[in-house]
Structures are given as C-alpha cells and as structure tokens.
Image 1 (tube, rainbow, N blue to C red):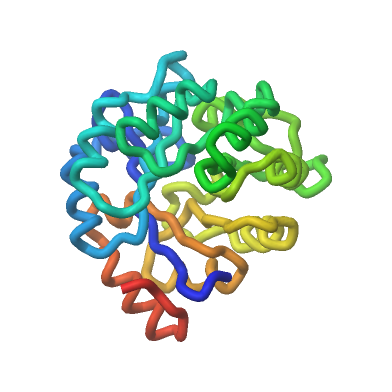
Image 2 (cartoon, helix red, strand yellow):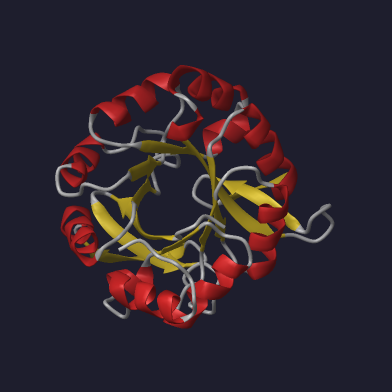
Length: 254
C-alpha cells in the first residue's frame, strides 16, 4: 500500500449521463457527469475516473465533449476509459484533458495494444480496467469479461493481469462484477490475489456500501478505493470516507 491511499469516485457514463446499476445491469440515471465531477473535486477526491460504459458495445469512441467539460472542472488526475482501441484514441483523450486512459475489451482482443500505448505514452498513462467475475473451473476462480461486463471470456483474471503488467500497464483497476452495486463490501479475496501478483498500484472497485467497507480493501492490498453509487446518491461523501480511514489508522491525502 502507498503511504497515502487514494479515494476515487467513478462516473459510469452512458448517453452523456452518469448511470449506475447492480452487477452491471438495470442502469439508472444518477445525474450530470460534469456537475458530479465538480462536486467530488470540491469534496476532496484524489482522482476521478470516467468510464463510457456503452462505447464498446455501441462500437463508437468515447464521448470527447464530456471528457473535455469534465477536465475543465477538476484539477486532479482524470482517468478515462471506454471505447479505446488505438494509440490515436489515447492521444485524443489526452488532448481533451484526460491524464490517464483505461483499456479493457480492445486490449483483450489484441494484447499488443498495451505495448503500443505504453511505448508511445509511457506506462504512467495506462490503466488496465478489469471487469472480473467469479467462475468455477478456472485456475484462480476468476475470469475477465468484456463489453462492459456483458461478454464472459475464458481468460483467467490473474493470468491476464500478469501479462498486462509485463506488457506495460501502470495500474490495475479491479472491478468485481459480483460485488458491483450490491453495497455488500469489496471482494477482499480478489483484491488480495491481485496485490500478490502486481508490481503496479491496485485500485479496488465494486461493492462499497458504508464507510467501514473501505479500510478492509486497503488492508487487503489496494492502493486506492473506487466507488460510485454511494457517492452519487449522497449516502456518503469523500470526506466521510477519508474521516473513517483516518480513524482506522490509514493515511489519506487532504
């Protein structure tokens, strides 16, 4: 774990609006991404992640206008993912204000994409987004999915994470589909397994429901914790989470 953990709100965007569901299904409108980004910045978010959750399914590029307007409102690192298929896509996102870019489906389809992005822009720009689901019969018990969690693969999640690190990703965003939106807490087993193999920072995602859920994920090995619905609904603020972490003896950025 890094000296100070990071608390990261996530904006899952579809058709220009923030959406959230449970287990990646039954998405509902949660608000305007630019307004929410500004709110979380004011609350003290360390970074912001914006994922265009239908870009790959719709076979289109990320909504650059939303990225641009969001970047104009926040002055913290902004990671953008969804529909990234080439180094030119990365260049365009960086040009409109992204600091880091997440890849998922396109990298699984063509792993050399990771090498190409890392070689052109550096590993610090590249985040591997892993939408992970439990699956019997695999070596680790976890597989990765594509197309916003809609398509299962037979690719073992740990093997893929290890290969992606070797190819040059600078960070792992590990999202548990099974825990996503349930508010039952992070998948600590998954976080711990990723920490054991990873030489790069690990972001835990999926399942946050209370301030008490975040510290266990960090103690399991995450360098950062990411959440969406608990922030969008106003159930928790960034400050609530950081205060609870400090009370639990975990250093946060102020």
